[in-house]
Image 1: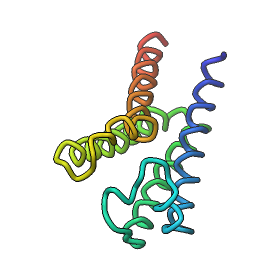
Image 2: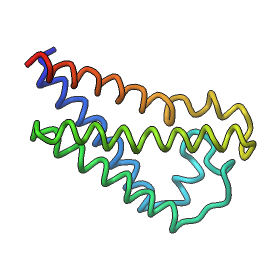
Image 3: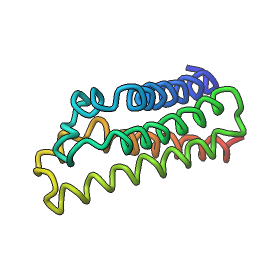
Length: 135
């Protein structure tokens, strides 16, 4: 696959996932809270305002990544911002699991939506940095 196509596809997927999740959080916070995989209610009672606040953050990350689809100069910063967001989110989940807020089974339940995304973005960041050095 062509590098440019790969980057556009990568950022499109990140943008789409974040924007759709953020819109879901804004439009129907209770539905999001009750049906998102990962048993969100285990972390505490629903606070619709807080869910909507986080929805705004998800949409912001999605918009930054959507800008990186078309403008190469945004890509490095979009990767870094997304990496910081996803990594801090994963660390909060780890902290809350290890301090006993939720059961230890959240360690494996949170793999697909909390732990895998920052790892994948980190790998893409390494590829991006390597490509910059080569060019």
